[in-house]
Length: 393
Image (cartoon, rainbow, N blue to C red; front, side, top):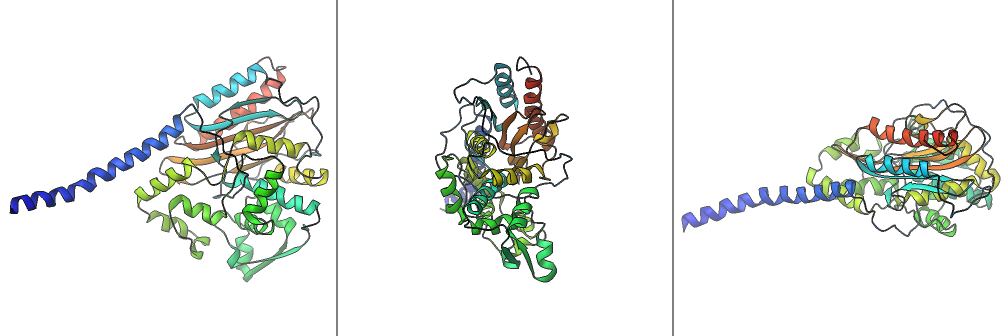
């Protein structure tokens, strides 16, 4: 009897060490299957938005050209993309080690070249673009003024990248305008500035309602930046996470198995997902004045041209005379697994030809330089193809 009891005790002590690693192995297999699969899951059918984790900020040397929206010329959604570019985009997507969606859409002619264009991928901070669009729509309708004053306090602080925090902490509050919040959100990817605008436009329902009304149904959003980032790691929000390295310290204490499980859930069905095709459609509508008034469209595109984030992403592939108003997004990292490394924008040639360019890397284990290389290669391919009369890239 004693021997049987000892055997049972040994078994009870041993089984967790077998089951837990097995569970982690299965989860890891799921994640990497998502990274390597060729067939995208069904596209989502719900509107968009959300915010981000912060990213390296560097001043871009790009200057803003005349970004006044103009309607497409000879646009035809059924027109096939130039074969050389389509082949190049497909090759770039297939050879990249990770889950990447790429779309190049001619704003003037309507054709689309894409790879994984219908796969829903996490947006993170690129969703600030849709908050900005919704705010400017309200301004167009007289429901919001960019000149209105807004006072922010410590209670309004968010998480990750928020340069405006210094101004708030200096005196306990900071009085500014909606125009300044919009500038900070779009050029600095400031999470606190974006959250303040997000509240004013009605939050998730307000933004998704606007996008749905415009037919942008393959974009969605989470309820807040805090909710999104806490959900990815399975933590409860604390106000202390708005300061210093408190969030990172707390995240280190989260069991690795929990982080793996939560990250797997996030990547399987991102609450801030958008399809690359959906994002490209939104950019095309913005560029042609079908989202906002001409004045508001030009205003937002000019802010995108002044963005200081991600200079080595899509913009790193620019040639002289070309410009790229854009918005980036960056997600959390778990060991070698990087998520939501994104850049989207309107590529403008020296002659004024325009292209909506979207590169969304949902998940990958490749280092930052390789992710940037992919994005730069997409930009260079469009430029090379146009320069060659679309006969080669």
